Figure 1 (cartoon, each protein chain N blue to C red):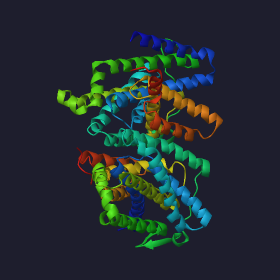
Figure 2 (spheres, each protein chain N blue to C red):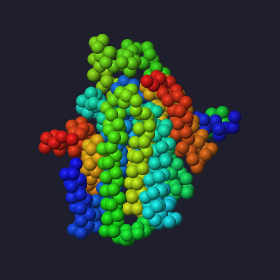
Figure 3 (cartoon, chains in turn purple, orange):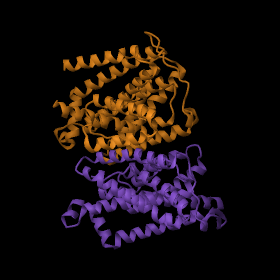
Figure 4 (tube, rainbow over the protein chains, first blue to last red):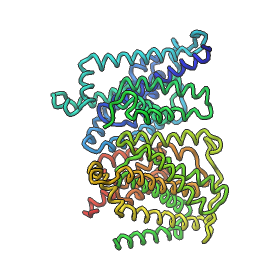
Length: 288
Length: 307
């Protein structure tokens, strides 16, 4: 296999893993709360900017990687408790629209605090160079992203499939009302899941920082690929989110290399194909 | 009914006379409001009457705009300005609608969103549509009755087109067809069981909404003299949704008020503070939380009027 082809595949994998970190929060929130969280891109953006400030303040990337998701998760919890909770009895559209309003709010807040220009975020010293893998030269930070993202995927799988909390979440995704009826504090679980999803969005923002830099429109830009991943993989499906991310990551990266004039269309073609053949997505529950 | 028509006539006369007493900037704001108002009304036909929430309505706005730009550059007549854009947008709506109406709810939102983004991606990259920069320097049409190149001339022309479109939409929602749409909104399964071909009604509503959205897009090009890929971007669809919600869904008049609120907020607040997006976002959040009926709903509640 030619080296540059392999390098492309690795780049696609890094992008796919990044998309996974982002879309898994989106799909968790949807699965549990039935909310298409359009502000998820905003959480990603907030994570990147929080990371930027934390790195500048502490000089330590790893500390930022740990703390920024907490901050974003807290913001997520506030949003859920104050604004989303009163809307669960309303038609689902109201919640989608509410999150659309938050896009404006957060984007402008970020411009206010950090200014509107692009801010680059340095990778941690440990991964600032490039290394050669089977003849392909790739930035070592991207390798770190791949390993880190896959490790998070594994941890998430353990959390959801093997812990009591995960069992509650799975039950809530299946039937939230019934789960509440069994004595689980479903309000708390909703808040926790939303905050956790937001924190994952923030985490992906910190991770994306050294690759994509931080700029106010980054959330709006990444939201569409993330939504496509969720639709391709199947709404609410964790496995679908992983497979969809890797698929879209490769499609986008190879599209850029091979069809530079129309690569932006490729992910939509992938999505349209999946939707026509399997409307519920690759791993989604069948539609009613 | 007659009182309403009379009220509408009064509003139209007031809007028509507006340029006589106002400067260039307010008139341009009003024109922008009329264009976006028409766009929002077309979305309201889908949302408020048929209960189909589309997050991809910008697709038809953009198709109308780009087709108008291409056609007007070739021959600046009324066919290029109004007929072709509306027809092209209707055709696009037929294709997108055919695939989208098979699903509903969240899937419908996502599918329409993705389709419109597909247009965005295409317009952003191909050179014959000007790629990132879009198409610029588009001439205004030559209209038989007078010149529309002046501010006042264009105002009269714009107002005529928007009023005619609004009346048409008003007729449609009051027709038996409009009642079937409302029935589908209320209870789709029952309408199906009673024997209505629900999918065909939904598709037709989607196409009609597309036609009027395309007209709005075309008017936007004639107003601005240019159009870029952002016309297709999902935020354009989102903004139209915002206008409909702020104004009040299922009212037709509401979305125009919503468009007015949106554009005035955007232009007036931005002269005082850079933070207009923040204020817009908060306004919108407050409306969703506390006034789901929008401006019209709040007014009705206050005055005790019924629909």
